[in-house]
Length: 471
Image 1 (cartoon, rainbow, N blue to C red):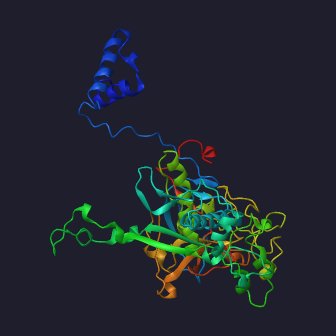
Image 2: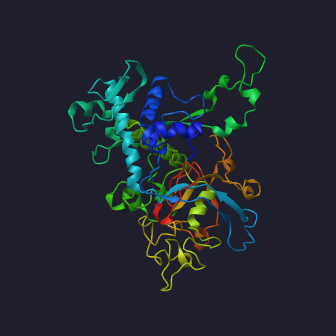
Image 3: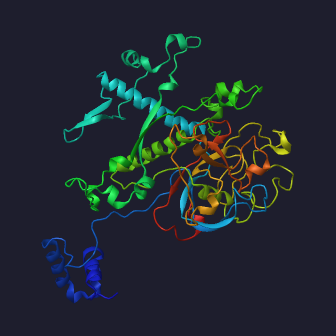
C-alpha cells in the first residue's frame, strides 16, 4: 500500500490504525496526527474522500425469496409457433439481479394484509373516539400529525364492550347478517396508498416541467422549481379478494364450497391466493414494502428496494431456471416424468382435471421446484406481471430489462387495461404452462385461476461468490 497517497494515508490512520507501516519508532508521530485530525474538523486535508460516516450495508435476502443472478437469455417461444409468431417472437434480452418469491402468495400471507388494513381502520376509529392511545396526534417534537399516526403498540381489544360499541360500524348491519353472525364488513376494508409516476416525470421536457415561478410566461431549467406533487398518485383500493370468482368463472358448475371457504378457512392457508385484481396485487406490494421498510426505519437502518410485481422478462427468466431454450421450467420437452406423472398442476388431456392429482389449486410447494428453487412457475395459478399487454411489444421493447407499462384510467377502453399473465393455471391446457407462452387478462377483473408473486430488485450489480450460498 502506497502511504504517500493522501486518501490512503488518511484511511490508514483514521480507520484501520495500521501504524506498523511506519514502524514502532513513529508511534508518537501517528498518535499526534490523529489528534490533529480530530481537532481540525473533518480531517480530509482538502482531498475528496466522500461523505462520512456511512453505514456498512449488506442486503439480506427477504424472507421467502430467492436470489436470481443477472444474466441474458432468449425470451419467447422455445420452438416455432406459427399462429402466435407475431405476439411472441424470440429475442435475446438481459435482466438485472433481483429477488423473487419462491412460491405464489398464499391465502394466509394475504390475510396478514387484510388484517393489517382492518386493524388500521379500527385504530383510527378508536382514536377519534378518544379510547386508549390508538393513534399519535403529535410527533416526538410536539408537532401535530395530520393525519394522526397509528399506534401499533396499542392492542385492539375486539371483545371489550366499550371498543365494540365504537367499532360497530365496521361490521355488517343486522339486516345483512347470516344467522346473526357478527362479521367484519369486507366492503369497508380499503387501503390508501401513494406511488410516484416516474414514467410521466421522465417524459416531461425540462423547460415544461421546471417553470420559473418568479417570471410569468418564462421557463427555467432549474431542478429545484419542479413540483413533484403532479407525479404523486393517490389510490384507494378495496383489498378483500373476490370470493365469488369461483362461481362467476364457470357457468353451470357447482363451486359454491370453494366460494364459501377458500380464502378464510385454515385448510387453505398454504394454497395460492386467487380472486384478486391486478390493482389489488399492486396495492399488496406497496403494503409489503411499507411493512419491511417501516421495520428497518424503526431500527435506524437504510431502506431497501420496493416490492413489486415482476416484469414479463423477469418472470420468464426466473421460470426458466437457467435452462435456456427449454419449453418448461423443469427443462426438456415433456410434461411428465419417467413414471408418467404430470410435473405441474394443469388440465391434461383436455378435461381430465384429476390426472395431475390436483383438481383445483394445490398447496404452493407442490411438485418439484425448478433449478432456481421456485415452485409452480408452471401451472397451479397463472400470475400477474407488471407488463401491459401489447401484441407487438417484442418488436419495440428494449433488450435491457425490457418492460412496457401503461397506467390505464377507469374510463380507458378495455384494450388499454390488458396486463400480461404468465405460467398457466390448474384449468389451462399444456400450451399455457410453457415458459414462452404469453397471454393477458384485464387489470380490473378477478379470476379463480390468477394469483401473483413479488419481486425486489437487488441493490448493486449482483452477488459474488459461490451460487450455492446466494440463497
